[in-house]
Image (cartoon, rainbow, N blue to C red; front, top):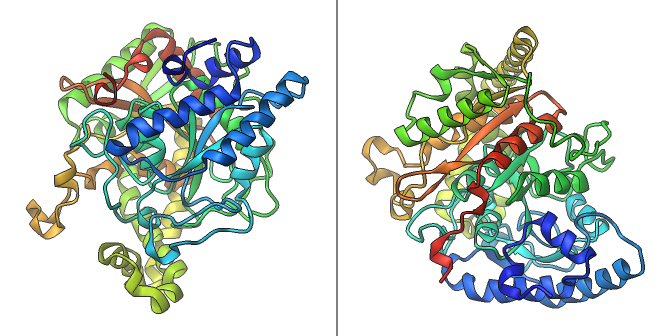
Length: 474
Protein backbone atom coordinates (compact mmCIF):
# COMPACT_ATOMS: atom_id res chain seq x y z
CA UNK A 1 0.00 0.00 0.00
CA UNK A 2 1.13 3.56 -0.71
CA UNK A 3 2.05 5.59 2.39
CA UNK A 4 0.06 8.70 3.25
CA UNK A 5 2.90 11.12 2.44
CA UNK A 6 3.07 9.75 -1.11
CA UNK A 7 -0.72 9.58 -1.48
CA UNK A 8 -1.27 13.34 -1.26
CA UNK A 9 1.18 13.91 -4.12
CA UNK A 10 -0.82 11.78 -6.55
CA UNK A 11 -2.86 13.43 -9.28
CA UNK A 12 -6.53 12.55 -9.75
CA UNK A 13 -5.56 10.09 -12.49
CA UNK A 14 -2.81 8.48 -10.42
CA UNK A 15 -5.03 8.19 -7.34
CA UNK A 16 -7.86 6.67 -9.41
CA UNK A 17 -5.47 4.11 -10.93
CA UNK A 18 -4.03 3.22 -7.51
CA UNK A 19 -7.58 2.68 -6.19
CA UNK A 20 -8.44 0.27 -8.96
CA UNK A 21 -5.16 -1.63 -8.64
CA UNK A 22 -5.83 -2.14 -4.94
CA UNK A 23 -2.77 -0.12 -3.91
CA UNK A 24 -4.87 2.23 -1.78
CA UNK A 25 -8.45 2.87 -0.73
CA UNK A 26 -10.72 5.88 -0.79
CA UNK A 27 -10.63 5.86 3.01
CA UNK A 28 -6.84 5.99 2.93
CA UNK A 29 -6.91 8.85 0.40
CA UNK A 30 -9.38 10.73 2.59
CA UNK A 31 -7.43 10.14 5.80
CA UNK A 32 -4.20 11.24 4.11
CA UNK A 33 -5.95 14.38 2.87
CA UNK A 34 -7.28 15.21 6.33
CA UNK A 35 -3.81 14.71 7.81
CA UNK A 36 -2.35 16.99 5.17
CA UNK A 37 -4.98 19.63 5.93
CA UNK A 38 -4.05 19.57 9.62
CA UNK A 39 -0.39 20.13 8.64
CA UNK A 40 -0.90 22.97 6.17
CA UNK A 41 -4.00 24.87 7.30
CA UNK A 42 -2.37 26.79 10.14
CA UNK A 43 -0.22 28.53 7.54
CA UNK A 44 -2.26 28.71 4.33
CA UNK A 45 -5.91 29.04 5.50
CA UNK A 46 -7.41 27.36 2.42
CA UNK A 47 -10.63 25.94 3.92
CA UNK A 48 -13.78 27.60 5.16
CA UNK A 49 -15.42 24.39 6.42
CA UNK A 50 -14.21 20.80 6.74
CA UNK A 51 -16.58 17.84 6.40
CA UNK A 52 -14.36 15.10 7.78
CA UNK A 53 -17.07 12.77 9.10
CA UNK A 54 -19.19 13.05 5.96
CA UNK A 55 -16.11 12.51 3.82
CA UNK A 56 -15.03 9.36 5.64
CA UNK A 57 -18.52 7.88 5.34
CA UNK A 58 -18.57 8.72 1.63
CA UNK A 59 -15.12 7.14 1.23
CA UNK A 60 -16.32 3.94 2.90
CA UNK A 61 -19.25 3.78 0.47
CA UNK A 62 -16.91 4.39 -2.45
CA UNK A 63 -14.66 1.52 -1.38
CA UNK A 64 -17.64 -0.82 -1.11
CA UNK A 65 -19.00 0.25 -4.51
CA UNK A 66 -15.68 -0.08 -6.32
CA UNK A 67 -15.06 -3.50 -4.75
CA UNK A 68 -18.52 -4.60 -5.92
CA UNK A 69 -17.87 -3.41 -9.49
CA UNK A 70 -20.11 -0.34 -9.26
CA UNK A 71 -17.48 2.04 -10.62
CA UNK A 72 -18.79 5.55 -11.33
CA UNK A 73 -15.71 6.79 -13.16
CA UNK A 74 -12.38 8.55 -12.54
CA UNK A 75 -13.60 10.72 -9.65
CA UNK A 76 -15.10 7.82 -7.71
CA UNK A 77 -13.50 7.80 -4.26
CA UNK A 78 -11.38 10.90 -4.89
CA UNK A 79 -11.42 13.70 -2.25
CA UNK A 80 -12.39 17.09 -3.72
CA UNK A 81 -13.12 20.59 -2.48
CA UNK A 82 -15.82 23.05 -3.52
CA UNK A 83 -15.66 26.85 -3.37
CA UNK A 84 -17.77 28.26 -0.57
CA UNK A 85 -20.16 30.08 -2.90
CA UNK A 86 -21.68 26.76 -4.06
CA UNK A 87 -24.73 25.56 -2.12
CA UNK A 88 -24.14 22.26 -0.32
CA UNK A 89 -27.03 20.61 1.50
CA UNK A 90 -26.44 20.43 5.24
CA UNK A 91 -23.03 22.12 5.00
CA UNK A 92 -22.15 25.72 5.87
CA UNK A 93 -22.08 28.01 2.85
CA UNK A 94 -21.03 31.51 3.87
CA UNK A 95 -19.22 32.92 0.79
CA UNK A 96 -16.71 34.60 3.11
CA UNK A 97 -19.33 37.02 4.45
CA UNK A 98 -20.95 37.77 7.79
CA UNK A 99 -24.16 38.33 5.83
CA UNK A 100 -24.51 34.55 5.47
CA UNK A 101 -22.87 33.59 8.74
CA UNK A 102 -24.29 30.23 9.86
CA UNK A 103 -26.22 29.67 6.61
CA UNK A 104 -26.80 26.00 5.76
CA UNK A 105 -28.54 25.35 2.41
CA UNK A 106 -31.27 22.72 2.08
CA UNK A 107 -30.22 21.67 -1.44
CA UNK A 108 -27.06 21.13 -3.46
CA UNK A 109 -25.84 23.27 -6.32
CA UNK A 110 -25.91 21.27 -9.55
CA UNK A 111 -22.11 21.12 -9.62
CA UNK A 112 -22.08 19.62 -6.10
CA UNK A 113 -24.80 17.12 -7.01
CA UNK A 114 -22.85 16.05 -10.10
CA UNK A 115 -19.69 15.53 -8.08
CA UNK A 116 -21.63 13.31 -5.69
CA UNK A 117 -23.10 11.38 -8.63
CA UNK A 118 -19.57 10.86 -9.96
CA UNK A 119 -18.63 9.32 -6.61
CA UNK A 120 -16.34 12.13 -5.49
CA UNK A 121 -15.70 12.58 -1.77
CA UNK A 122 -16.37 16.14 -0.57
CA UNK A 123 -13.68 16.96 1.96
CA UNK A 124 -14.78 20.54 2.59
CA UNK A 125 -15.64 24.00 1.33
CA UNK A 126 -12.72 26.14 0.21
CA UNK A 127 -12.34 29.79 1.13
CA UNK A 128 -13.21 32.59 -1.25
CA UNK A 129 -13.14 36.35 -1.16
CA UNK A 130 -16.23 37.90 0.38
CA UNK A 131 -19.04 37.55 -2.17
CA UNK A 132 -16.27 36.66 -4.65
CA UNK A 133 -15.18 40.29 -4.93
CA UNK A 134 -13.93 41.48 -1.52
CA UNK A 135 -11.12 40.32 0.70
CA UNK A 136 -10.58 37.52 3.19
CA UNK A 137 -9.71 37.74 6.87
CA UNK A 138 -7.39 36.22 7.84
CA UNK A 139 -5.84 36.19 4.37
CA UNK A 140 -5.33 32.91 2.57
CA UNK A 141 -1.60 32.58 1.95
CA UNK A 142 0.42 31.17 -0.91
CA UNK A 143 2.20 27.88 -0.19
CA UNK A 144 4.92 29.06 -2.61
CA UNK A 145 5.64 32.11 -0.46
CA UNK A 146 3.38 32.92 2.52
CA UNK A 147 4.02 36.62 2.02
CA UNK A 148 2.63 36.49 -1.52
CA UNK A 149 -0.91 36.82 -2.86
CA UNK A 150 -2.27 33.45 -4.09
CA UNK A 151 -4.98 34.87 -6.37
CA UNK A 152 -8.70 35.44 -6.15
CA UNK A 153 -11.47 34.85 -5.69
CA UNK A 154 -11.20 31.04 -5.79
CA UNK A 155 -8.18 31.31 -3.52
CA UNK A 156 -8.95 28.37 -1.25
CA UNK A 157 -9.34 25.94 -4.12
CA UNK A 158 -6.03 27.02 -5.64
CA UNK A 159 -4.07 27.00 -2.41
CA UNK A 160 -5.46 23.65 -1.24
CA UNK A 161 -4.42 22.04 -4.51
CA UNK A 162 -0.94 23.55 -4.44
CA UNK A 163 -0.48 22.54 -0.80
CA UNK A 164 -1.52 18.95 -1.66
CA UNK A 165 -4.50 19.07 0.69
CA UNK A 166 -6.98 18.10 -2.07
CA UNK A 167 -6.93 16.31 -5.45
CA UNK A 168 -9.35 18.49 -7.38
CA UNK A 169 -11.47 21.54 -6.62
CA UNK A 170 -14.27 23.70 -7.96
CA UNK A 171 -13.84 27.42 -8.50
CA UNK A 172 -15.90 30.13 -10.15
CA UNK A 173 -14.71 32.61 -12.75
CA UNK A 174 -16.41 35.97 -13.47
CA UNK A 175 -13.23 37.82 -14.34
CA UNK A 176 -10.48 35.22 -14.10
CA UNK A 177 -11.08 33.76 -10.64
CA UNK A 178 -10.34 30.19 -11.71
CA UNK A 179 -7.45 31.01 -14.02
CA UNK A 180 -5.65 33.59 -11.87
CA UNK A 181 -5.14 31.32 -8.80
CA UNK A 182 -4.26 28.51 -11.23
CA UNK A 183 -1.52 30.66 -12.73
CA UNK A 184 -0.16 31.76 -9.36
CA UNK A 185 -0.15 28.22 -7.91
CA UNK A 186 1.23 26.05 -10.76
CA UNK A 187 -2.18 24.54 -11.53
CA UNK A 188 -4.57 23.84 -14.37
CA UNK A 189 -7.79 25.87 -14.30
CA UNK A 190 -10.53 25.69 -16.93
CA UNK A 191 -13.18 28.32 -17.53
CA UNK A 192 -15.35 26.37 -19.95
CA UNK A 193 -17.72 27.92 -22.46
CA UNK A 194 -20.48 30.01 -20.89
CA UNK A 195 -23.36 27.64 -20.12
CA UNK A 196 -21.27 24.47 -20.37
CA UNK A 197 -21.37 24.00 -16.57
CA UNK A 198 -24.52 24.83 -14.63
CA UNK A 199 -24.42 27.76 -12.21
CA UNK A 200 -27.66 26.70 -10.47
CA UNK A 201 -27.17 26.94 -6.71
CA UNK A 202 -24.02 29.06 -7.03
CA UNK A 203 -24.16 32.49 -5.38
CA UNK A 204 -23.65 34.94 -8.25
CA UNK A 205 -21.35 37.86 -8.77
CA UNK A 206 -22.64 38.81 -12.23
CA UNK A 207 -25.04 36.31 -13.77
CA UNK A 208 -24.14 36.89 -17.43
CA UNK A 209 -20.39 36.56 -16.76
CA UNK A 210 -20.22 33.84 -14.08
CA UNK A 211 -18.65 30.49 -14.93
CA UNK A 212 -18.10 27.39 -12.77
CA UNK A 213 -14.96 25.38 -13.47
CA UNK A 214 -12.51 22.70 -12.32
CA UNK A 215 -9.05 23.24 -10.88
CA UNK A 216 -6.49 20.43 -10.76
CA UNK A 217 -2.77 19.74 -10.81
CA UNK A 218 -2.76 18.05 -14.25
CA UNK A 219 -4.47 18.58 -17.60
CA UNK A 220 -5.91 15.06 -17.81
CA UNK A 221 -7.39 15.31 -14.32
CA UNK A 222 -8.97 18.62 -15.27
CA UNK A 223 -10.55 17.11 -18.37
CA UNK A 224 -11.94 14.26 -16.27
CA UNK A 225 -13.36 16.68 -13.72
CA UNK A 226 -15.02 18.85 -16.37
CA UNK A 227 -16.56 15.71 -17.83
CA UNK A 228 -18.19 15.01 -14.48
CA UNK A 229 -19.72 18.47 -13.97
CA UNK A 230 -20.59 19.60 -17.52
CA UNK A 231 -23.94 19.21 -19.28
CA UNK A 232 -27.32 20.85 -19.74
CA UNK A 233 -29.27 21.70 -16.60
CA UNK A 234 -32.95 22.72 -16.96
CA UNK A 235 -32.71 24.47 -13.57
CA UNK A 236 -30.24 27.01 -15.01
CA UNK A 237 -31.81 29.36 -17.55
CA UNK A 238 -28.38 30.03 -19.06
CA UNK A 239 -27.36 26.39 -19.35
CA UNK A 240 -26.42 25.45 -22.91
CA UNK A 241 -28.34 22.67 -24.62
CA UNK A 242 -25.13 21.00 -25.70
CA UNK A 243 -24.09 17.48 -24.81
CA UNK A 244 -20.85 17.13 -22.89
CA UNK A 245 -18.34 14.96 -24.76
CA UNK A 246 -15.55 12.85 -23.32
CA UNK A 247 -13.01 15.64 -22.92
CA UNK A 248 -10.18 13.11 -22.55
CA UNK A 249 -10.79 11.50 -25.97
CA UNK A 250 -7.87 12.32 -28.23
CA UNK A 251 -6.13 14.34 -25.55
CA UNK A 252 -2.80 12.76 -26.53
CA UNK A 253 -3.23 13.63 -30.22
CA UNK A 254 -0.53 16.31 -30.23
CA UNK A 255 -0.58 19.77 -31.76
CA UNK A 256 0.72 19.24 -35.29
CA UNK A 257 -1.23 21.38 -37.73
CA UNK A 258 -3.13 23.34 -35.09
CA UNK A 259 -3.24 27.09 -35.75
CA UNK A 260 -2.70 29.17 -32.62
CA UNK A 261 -2.94 32.96 -32.69
CA UNK A 262 -1.08 35.56 -30.65
CA UNK A 263 -1.89 39.28 -30.48
CA UNK A 264 1.47 40.44 -29.21
CA UNK A 265 0.45 44.10 -28.93
CA UNK A 266 -2.32 43.26 -26.46
CA UNK A 267 -1.01 40.19 -24.63
CA UNK A 268 2.79 40.56 -24.48
CA UNK A 269 3.60 44.22 -23.97
CA UNK A 270 1.29 46.46 -21.88
CA UNK A 271 2.39 45.89 -18.28
CA UNK A 272 3.81 42.41 -18.91
CA UNK A 273 6.96 41.82 -16.86
CA UNK A 274 10.02 40.35 -18.54
CA UNK A 275 9.87 36.94 -16.86
CA UNK A 276 6.24 36.41 -17.90
CA UNK A 277 6.90 37.54 -21.45
CA UNK A 278 9.92 35.24 -21.72
CA UNK A 279 7.92 32.30 -20.38
CA UNK A 280 5.16 32.87 -22.91
CA UNK A 281 7.60 33.12 -25.81
CA UNK A 282 9.17 29.85 -24.66
CA UNK A 283 5.79 28.10 -24.58
CA UNK A 284 5.00 29.45 -28.05
CA UNK A 285 8.38 28.31 -29.36
CA UNK A 286 7.99 24.81 -27.92
CA UNK A 287 4.49 24.41 -29.36
CA UNK A 288 5.86 25.49 -32.74
CA UNK A 289 8.63 22.89 -32.44
CA UNK A 290 5.90 20.28 -31.80
CA UNK A 291 4.22 21.21 -35.08
CA UNK A 292 1.74 23.93 -34.17
CA UNK A 293 1.38 26.89 -36.52
CA UNK A 294 1.77 30.16 -34.59
CA UNK A 295 -0.08 33.03 -36.28
CA UNK A 296 0.42 36.69 -35.40
CA UNK A 297 -2.99 38.36 -35.29
CA UNK A 298 -4.44 41.73 -34.41
CA UNK A 299 -7.82 42.27 -32.76
CA UNK A 300 -8.39 45.96 -31.96
CA UNK A 301 -11.65 45.11 -30.18
CA UNK A 302 -9.65 43.62 -27.31
CA UNK A 303 -9.19 47.17 -26.07
CA UNK A 304 -12.93 47.27 -25.28
CA UNK A 305 -12.96 44.34 -22.89
CA UNK A 306 -11.99 45.93 -19.57
CA UNK A 307 -14.43 48.82 -19.55
CA UNK A 308 -17.23 46.72 -21.05
CA UNK A 309 -16.92 43.84 -18.60
CA UNK A 310 -16.56 46.12 -15.57
CA UNK A 311 -19.76 47.96 -16.48
CA UNK A 312 -21.73 44.73 -16.85
CA UNK A 313 -20.30 43.26 -13.66
CA UNK A 314 -20.94 46.38 -11.57
CA UNK A 315 -24.57 46.67 -12.63
CA UNK A 316 -25.41 42.98 -12.24
CA UNK A 317 -23.67 42.77 -8.84
CA UNK A 318 -25.48 45.87 -7.60
CA UNK A 319 -28.79 44.47 -8.80
CA UNK A 320 -28.34 41.17 -6.95
CA UNK A 321 -27.27 42.78 -3.66
CA UNK A 322 -29.53 45.85 -3.69
CA UNK A 323 -32.20 44.61 -1.27
CA UNK A 324 -29.77 42.69 0.92
CA UNK A 325 -27.51 45.70 1.39
CA UNK A 326 -30.53 47.76 2.49
CA UNK A 327 -31.39 45.19 5.15
CA UNK A 328 -27.94 43.92 6.19
CA UNK A 329 -25.52 46.50 4.87
CA UNK A 330 -23.67 46.71 8.18
CA UNK A 331 -22.63 43.06 7.85
CA UNK A 332 -20.68 43.63 4.62
CA UNK A 333 -17.09 44.72 4.95
CA UNK A 334 -16.78 48.37 3.84
CA UNK A 335 -14.68 47.58 0.78
CA UNK A 336 -16.98 44.82 -0.43
CA UNK A 337 -20.08 46.92 0.10
CA UNK A 338 -18.58 49.81 -1.86
CA UNK A 339 -17.62 47.46 -4.70
CA UNK A 340 -21.12 46.01 -4.86
CA UNK A 341 -22.94 49.34 -4.58
CA UNK A 342 -21.02 51.25 -7.21
CA UNK A 343 -23.11 49.75 -10.00
CA UNK A 344 -26.16 51.61 -8.73
CA UNK A 345 -24.65 54.79 -10.13
CA UNK A 346 -24.26 53.36 -13.65
CA UNK A 347 -26.88 54.64 -16.08
CA UNK A 348 -29.17 52.14 -17.77
CA UNK A 349 -28.02 53.54 -21.11
CA UNK A 350 -24.42 52.73 -20.20
CA UNK A 351 -25.36 49.18 -19.26
CA UNK A 352 -27.20 48.69 -22.55
CA UNK A 353 -24.23 50.15 -24.42
CA UNK A 354 -21.95 47.67 -22.65
CA UNK A 355 -24.22 44.76 -23.64
CA UNK A 356 -24.09 45.92 -27.26
CA UNK A 357 -20.31 46.29 -27.06
CA UNK A 358 -20.11 42.72 -25.79
CA UNK A 359 -22.00 41.48 -28.84
CA UNK A 360 -19.67 43.41 -31.14
CA UNK A 361 -16.70 41.88 -29.34
CA UNK A 362 -18.11 38.37 -29.66
CA UNK A 363 -18.70 38.90 -33.37
CA UNK A 364 -15.17 40.22 -33.86
CA UNK A 365 -13.68 37.27 -31.99
CA UNK A 366 -15.75 34.80 -34.01
CA UNK A 367 -14.69 36.46 -37.25
CA UNK A 368 -11.01 36.36 -36.21
CA UNK A 369 -11.10 32.64 -35.46
CA UNK A 370 -12.87 31.94 -38.75
CA UNK A 371 -10.70 34.23 -40.88
CA UNK A 372 -7.42 32.85 -39.54
CA UNK A 373 -8.72 29.29 -39.06
CA UNK A 374 -7.58 29.37 -35.44
CA UNK A 375 -8.21 26.78 -32.75
CA UNK A 376 -6.85 28.97 -29.95
CA UNK A 377 -5.34 32.27 -28.87
CA UNK A 378 -2.34 32.06 -26.56
CA UNK A 379 -1.17 34.54 -23.94
CA UNK A 380 0.16 34.78 -20.41
CA UNK A 381 -2.67 34.16 -17.97
CA UNK A 382 -1.75 37.31 -16.07
CA UNK A 383 1.02 39.80 -16.86
CA UNK A 384 2.88 39.53 -13.53
CA UNK A 385 3.86 37.01 -10.88
CA UNK A 386 2.41 36.99 -7.37
CA UNK A 387 2.61 40.38 -5.59
CA UNK A 388 3.16 40.76 -1.86
CA UNK A 389 0.09 40.33 0.34
CA UNK A 390 0.80 43.55 2.21
CA UNK A 391 0.72 45.50 -1.04
CA UNK A 392 -2.50 43.84 -2.23
CA UNK A 393 -4.45 44.68 0.91
CA UNK A 394 -2.96 48.13 1.40
CA UNK A 395 -5.74 50.74 1.20
CA UNK A 396 -6.16 52.02 -2.35
CA UNK A 397 -5.65 55.58 -1.13
CA UNK A 398 -2.12 54.63 -0.05
CA UNK A 399 -1.18 53.21 -3.45
CA UNK A 400 0.62 55.20 -6.13
CA UNK A 401 -2.01 56.61 -8.53
CA UNK A 402 -4.65 54.80 -6.49
CA UNK A 403 -3.82 51.49 -8.17
CA UNK A 404 -3.27 48.11 -6.51
CA UNK A 405 -0.82 45.42 -7.68
CA UNK A 406 -3.76 43.28 -8.85
CA UNK A 407 -5.44 45.88 -11.07
CA UNK A 408 -3.55 44.56 -14.11
CA UNK A 409 -4.40 40.90 -13.41
CA UNK A 410 -7.64 41.05 -15.37
CA UNK A 411 -6.21 42.48 -18.60
CA UNK A 412 -5.58 39.05 -20.11
CA UNK A 413 -8.45 37.05 -18.57
CA UNK A 414 -11.39 39.41 -19.15
CA UNK A 415 -11.72 38.72 -22.91
CA UNK A 416 -12.82 35.11 -22.40
CA UNK A 417 -15.38 36.10 -19.77
CA UNK A 418 -16.78 38.76 -22.06
CA UNK A 419 -16.99 36.49 -25.11
CA UNK A 420 -17.99 33.37 -23.17
CA UNK A 421 -15.33 31.33 -24.96
CA UNK A 422 -13.47 28.56 -23.12
CA UNK A 423 -10.09 29.44 -21.64
CA UNK A 424 -7.57 27.33 -19.76
CA UNK A 425 -4.60 28.35 -17.63
CA UNK A 426 -1.81 25.80 -17.34
CA UNK A 427 1.69 25.81 -15.79
CA UNK A 428 4.29 27.49 -18.01
CA UNK A 429 7.29 27.90 -15.75
CA UNK A 430 8.70 29.85 -12.81
CA UNK A 431 10.21 33.24 -12.17
CA UNK A 432 13.85 33.51 -11.02
CA UNK A 433 12.39 33.82 -7.48
CA UNK A 434 10.66 30.44 -7.82
CA UNK A 435 7.11 31.77 -8.27
CA UNK A 436 4.79 29.97 -10.70
CA UNK A 437 3.73 31.51 -14.01
CA UNK A 438 0.84 30.26 -16.13
CA UNK A 439 -0.03 30.59 -19.80
CA UNK A 440 -3.57 30.82 -21.19
CA UNK A 441 -5.28 29.29 -24.20
CA UNK A 442 -8.62 30.72 -25.32
CA UNK A 443 -10.56 28.54 -27.76
CA UNK A 444 -13.64 28.18 -29.91
CA UNK A 445 -17.02 27.89 -28.16
CA UNK A 446 -17.63 24.36 -26.85
CA UNK A 447 -14.20 23.20 -28.03
CA UNK A 448 -12.60 22.67 -24.64
CA UNK A 449 -11.24 19.35 -25.91
CA UNK A 450 -8.78 21.09 -28.25
CA UNK A 451 -7.50 23.32 -25.47
CA UNK A 452 -6.92 20.24 -23.34
CA UNK A 453 -5.07 18.56 -26.23
CA UNK A 454 -2.70 21.51 -26.66
CA UNK A 455 -2.12 21.93 -22.92
CA UNK A 456 -1.57 18.19 -22.48
CA UNK A 457 1.08 18.15 -25.21
CA UNK A 458 2.98 20.97 -23.53
CA UNK A 459 2.58 19.40 -20.09
CA UNK A 460 4.04 16.09 -21.27
CA UNK A 461 7.09 17.86 -22.67
CA UNK A 462 7.82 19.68 -19.42
CA UNK A 463 7.98 18.83 -15.72
CA UNK A 464 6.45 21.96 -14.20
CA UNK A 465 3.62 19.95 -12.64
CA UNK A 466 6.18 18.04 -10.55
CA UNK A 467 7.37 21.16 -8.71
CA UNK A 468 6.15 21.39 -5.12
CA UNK A 469 5.89 24.50 -2.91
CA UNK A 470 8.83 24.31 -0.52
CA UNK A 471 7.08 26.33 2.20
CA UNK A 472 4.69 23.47 2.96
CA UNK A 473 7.29 20.69 2.64
CA UNK A 474 10.11 19.72 4.93
